[in-house]
Image (cartoon, rainbow, N blue to C red; front, side, top):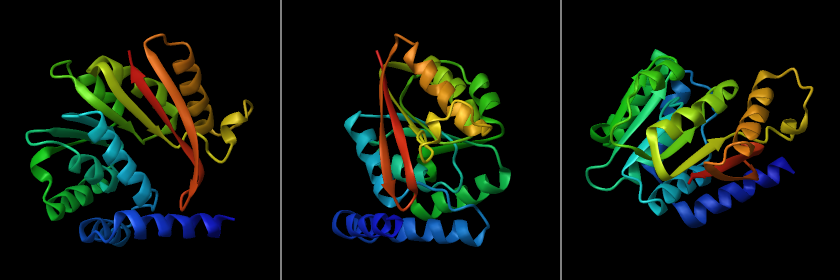
Length: 218
């Protein structure tokens, strides 16, 4: 079945996305520099771009840069004068991402900050609020990242969290996997927070069986 998922992703990309030299070069550069192949798929990247455009996002926050593949998709959604802050733990990943941003012609609208995301977020002061937040970093801290996103956002802000199904592992309350426990804590956190309207969808494709969580700040 997973082979079929890949074939459908390829079909979607061929029919709806088309060739994109900058994004192909980004993935090739990431691989050459030894980054893990855990980026969102092309179809998911375009979905992020469209969601950001639908939200009218002028300021975007991303938690988890890796090599900047999803960052590029999100930055392309920004209007003239828009900006994106992306947080990355690893200095090497951040260096690779900067090179990808330069190649894509987007460096002027992307601010990449290096270090533990929790520290970077804690150091950020509420100013011009973010309109959309995409979270795709260490799953153990997802609940914290959502709380910080709310602090730095506005009413009506969109929050998207990746990898929330984990091949069904989210159902396993006794899992020893910290990523699964962190994901379950995220669901519990959103369930108990009256400030948020949220749902999640399962996805299958080139990235296997997983899903996105989508929330709106009231």
